[in-house]
Length: 334
Image (spheres, helix red, strand yellow):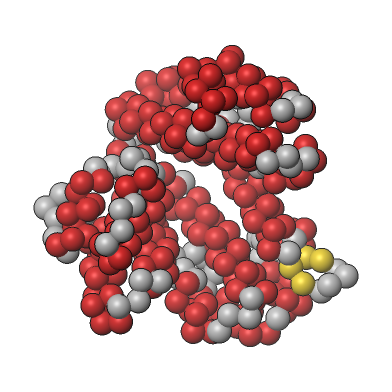
């Protein structure tokens, strides 16, 4: 799509950004002595209507999900390229597919785990999971659904649901990036997949996972060949460090490498890649035209929710301010 078609939606995005929590507000929540004091900071934010209820029942997750749901519903209305919003909400659709399959295969009631975010209603996903058919879902959703059904019919392994859908999510994500018709999106999504592959690779190496397992869980939709990732896993952490010194990810992996142990830290890998992606979103946020401000705003909203959940959970459970701060992610809030 031409950049000009995003003119009106980007104007609204700039208005919405004014409601993102500021660094000062996060700092006040972090320094609050109690859970209630931290929640009180939200009285001056879009979360204000839930403050009193949260102080009573501490069910802040429902507030966050409601806020994200409203955000996506509004963006589906105002953004002309629906594939762009579908792409950013695809993780929730695949989360819901996991829940629905586990409901179907274990006969449990798991409705409380469903997240009402995505291009297609949960009722349509549920019907497709139960029947393997849908007149509304796109081909890629049905490929994912039918792969799970075929695997379960053959092996009756509920644990395989997560593995299959995690891999299919990245394949679907990369295809959606192309379908947006936007020049910058495929490269951005490819980087996102690379970051997730790096996290999966290092975690798998630390846990001693087999080559077959890593072959199953790593995505082929990033820029780093899966064959290279598997070779890295077989040759160890120092080999990995040397391999990535010739790539754009050199600085990130060096930051996550512990010289004393000679290994990567999974926590640091997640931290540095999350923050590197937010830096890309900061750059996207500064663009005046095109789709990037939309993506940046959605990501900022999701990081806001993640940070709020960390703070409130920490305050509720007596976690120190320093420990909470270490786990928080960068945002482009003022």
